[in-house]
Amino acid sequence: MEDLHAKFLPQFVVLARKRLALALTAAIARDHSATSKVVRELHTLAGEAGLLGLHEVVPLARECEHKAKALHASHSDADADLLVGGLRQLEGVIERIGATAPKAGNS
Amino acid sequence: MAAVNRDRFIVRAELRVGNDSVISYGFDLTSSSVFVVTEWNAPVGTTVSLRLSFPRILDPIDVTARIADIRVAGEPGEPAGVGLVFDEDSAGACLLDELERVESCGEASPSAERPYRVLLVDDSWLIRDMFAYGTAKFFERPGALAIDHAEDAEEAWAKLAKSTYDLVIVDYFLPSEDGASLIARLRGDARLARTPIVAISVGGRDAREATISAGADVFVDKPLVFRDLFNTLRVLAERRERARPVPERKAILVFDDSPFALALTRAALESAGFTVAIAADLSSFERQRVAFDPDLILVDVQMPEAFGDDVASTLRGWHGVEVPILLVSSLEQSELERRAQRAQASGYICKGAGMSELVRRCRELLEVAP
Image (cartoon, rainbow over all chains, first blue to last red; front, side):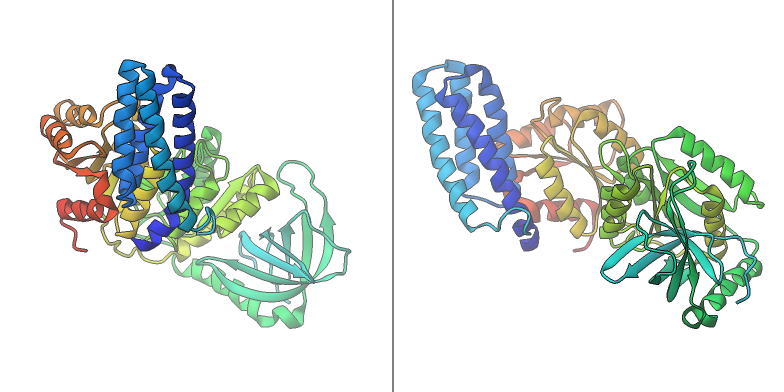
């Protein structure tokens, strides 16, 4: 499984960055019409991280997914700020993983 | 040099002159000459190095040849190329022997117990009809050639997983997944890697380069030179190896809306020895389920079109599907367990458990040793 991990990790990082960028943009802009999509993106991110065995990422992504669901229900600034905070934390972990992963396409 | 009377067949032609290198195909092969289809050319009289081959017919043979003729593209079926005459010292008795061996082999085994099986992957019904016509016209013995048909890479992969073919003919332009991608998958699969592959297309040089790079043995332009192609099939049918038993591999169908999860799961399961088909939406899943006839189904739970537990429940209750079904999700374990029970699924796998656990559970359910 190590070779699969090395092959797929760069793709995961690229996809995760896109998903996080979408979620952050929507949360910062208080774009509540995009929140259900953000929930799906974070759920998918958690699943993909789980399959790759990225145990540090899964609980953070799940937590962000729950925060996005809360925001979807409340539309409140407080929940939006909580989501942005969670996403920033998740972003930091993804970037740390990305810094150690081989470049996409090199695997 | 004596000519061989046998009907002509298509060959892979690798041509080299100085720094120029071309991989294409040739026809009108005799013991003294061949016509190689290519946009490349050099002055008449130029000497070239040439390697000719065709899997199961002609082992690679290196000859030196001279350009005797240059043809520009003409009517459909008259592609551009160079007529090459072999240097007698180079080709010598070797090529003559090879061609005579092909001829004598055909005479020695005029009958066969089973048909030569070809999978034609092409979404054109016209091409399918042309192959049916060609089979009737070029094969005197009914049943000597059996051509099966797949309209896209997905259907082809499902058929390849369940049946054995002596040759695969793949069109480059296919819906959704192109022919080069299918060929690369074939070459990457231990069971199918040695199957001869002929790529066909109207796409010219780009299609040729893409399919040859992916692992096709020979590329042939459309419109096809049917006489040579069917003569090739006839020679192959006469020379084919006896069918060898193919080890059974369990088939798993994976349904997930994430292309990344599908690619990763497929790679992990294939490396564990399973045959895998994937589906990213409901219509693809239903097509694959019928065509692929899987031994195990893995279904993601939260997808845009449907919940995986509803899919599992429908398969069990409405379609009477009895093969194991596993829900695969990043939902909380307790919720996943509840959904699996309600849907009469065989169990569940938390994505967070990782690919090793997923492979282990598949082996366990299908009773496959690691």
